Amino acid sequence: MAEPRRLIIHFVDGSKKLLEFPQQVAEDTMAARLKEALESRHLVIEADGALVVIPFENIRYLQSYPAPKKLPSYAIKGASFKD
Image (cartoon, rainbow, N blue to C red; front, side, top):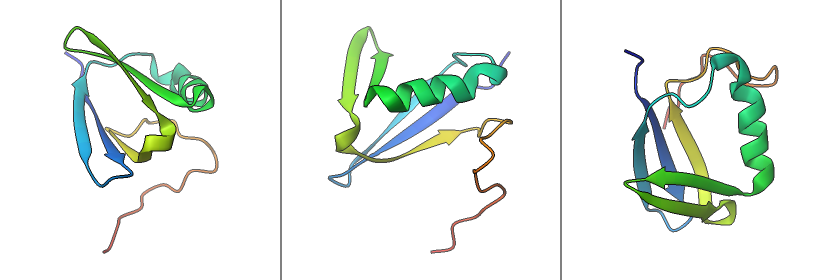
């Protein structure tokens, strides 16, 4: 069984939401799907039978677990926050 995915959405007002979901796409297509999502300017989620659309203007940042094995060439890898 595949490891569940987790996404923490950090909103500009300081609140956050944790989502758990199964893997959505194959690892080799994940970068293209992420690019498509970022270009759409909305995060679209089906959760608990409802459609949720969150404009990126309301999101400060996203944390996704586990990190994909294949990351863009410009990604900083192996980092740790120290604050």
